[in-house]
Amino acid sequence: MADLYPVRRALLSVSDKTGLTDLAKALHDRGVELLSTGGSAKAIRDAGLPVRDVADVTGFPEMMDGRVKTLHPMVHGGLLALRDNEDHVAAMNVHKIGGIDLLVVNLYPFEATLARGAEYDEMIENIDIGGPAMIRAAAKNHDFVTTIVDVQDYAALLAELDANDGQTSYAFRQNQAQIAYARTAAYDAAVSGWMAGALGNEAPRRRAVAGEIAQTLRYGENPHQSAAFYVDGSSRPGVATAVQHQGKELSYNNINDTDAAFELVAEFDPADGPACAIIKHANPCGVARGATLLEAYQKAFDCDRTSAFGGIVAFNMPLDGATAIKITEIFTEVVIAPGASDAAKGIFATKKNLRLLTTDGLPDASAPGKTIRQVAGGYLVQDKDVGSVVADDLKLVTKAQPSPEQMDDMLFAWKVAKHVKSNAIVYVKDGATVGVGAGQMSRVDSALIAAKKAERMAEVLGLPEPLTKGSVVASDAFFPFADGLLEASAAGATCVIQPGGSMRDNEVIEAADEAGLAMVLTGMRHFRH
Image (cartoon, rainbow, N blue to C red; front, side):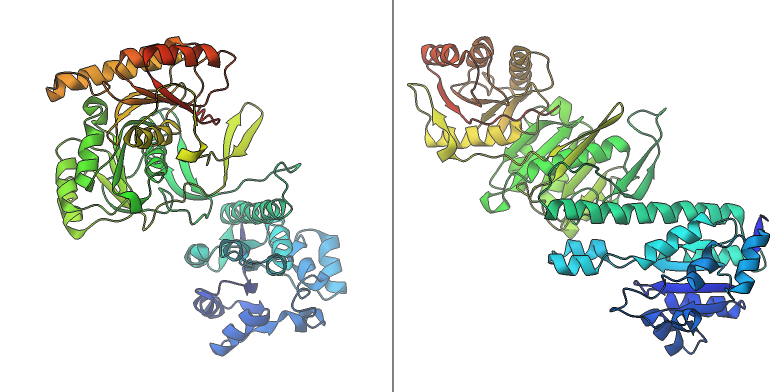
């Protein structure tokens, strides 16, 4: 195997014909013989370039609606033959198999067909067979064959040929082979994942996961960790599909926190009014609704101004100039919203380190999906938590009854608690969080921390008492004892929403009645680890 190997004969067979004729002309101009199939051959021929149909090479026409056209020894022999193996060369001569030095293939648009919700039979017809077979063959023989599977690599191919007098280097071929195998792996992952879903198989024997790199990150959670950001091709609005209008490159933590913020704010339908979520270290430090975006932001900010510094801010509606002005009063890492006015963009333009992302839509908080987490030796896969409740789902278990306004606040608090790390305690008053306790080993500690934060904010805001007085409180899981409930009552909460289900529910209900609290049970918990 020589480091440099010439490209004298190329097979081009692509579904995505972007740049095809330009590439074909560039190869022809460099003296490369062109082979092709079907629509690719027609496009090249229509461009006035000489091209030989694969059917002429194999002696068999394309058949079975194009299902069979390249699965032939004249093709695969040309891709797989080792040019420095005497037996292989002899077989090529005996059977008149011409070597193929360059394969340019991209696959049937299976992922795009899936994204538009095609029916089963159409999905089956968009499973490519000949393409992956050729790609794998060519990539295996990268000692001699160059494999190109992405339009974005056409320019690099031509630059490589020019740099090496019509040849490609082993390093280039090897790198392209890795890209090729990753592409077929991702393709097979999409097919197998779709088929498992079509069969209703929630736990298939084997599960493949794939992504395409979107960004090589400066580092991971910490500077000594390398990291990269991959996207799965989903059209779900969010950090992966957002347009970044300004600011420096997003970091690993920025991406993680921005995703958390936008998924939380998406719980609140814009039809019900503006909402804002402020996130720090993947936990909300303030969430609120308001008559305007500015009011929603201010109420969210006033929940915990200290933690909001350097945070991530998400909105459920396009950002306006007045709100943008207010945001720029403190240091903010990222702002994400479905859109932004020209005025807002102009205001943020004066803050070069602030990143503004727009998504042209909100993710559907009720849309099913999977979450994946790596553990030593494997992966945990589960359904995305899309659980929600409405007022009619709640079970009143106390003598005291909540008012309609308190009921609204409890439902609001429940949505927020779903996005707070367990053990989660969330105090809410008038459509805004006023205290958040997150990630503690004890539910009592979460209640105490949230109340303490509210006391601190009362001092900052010059209020006579913390806003937890007269608030409602949500707990993401049941109170195993009455102590956590009583801490919330001591902080001033008057209504409680929690899942129930403890062996001591009766004790907790009795304690609520003694404290004069109204309490409803959801029958659903929201652990978030």
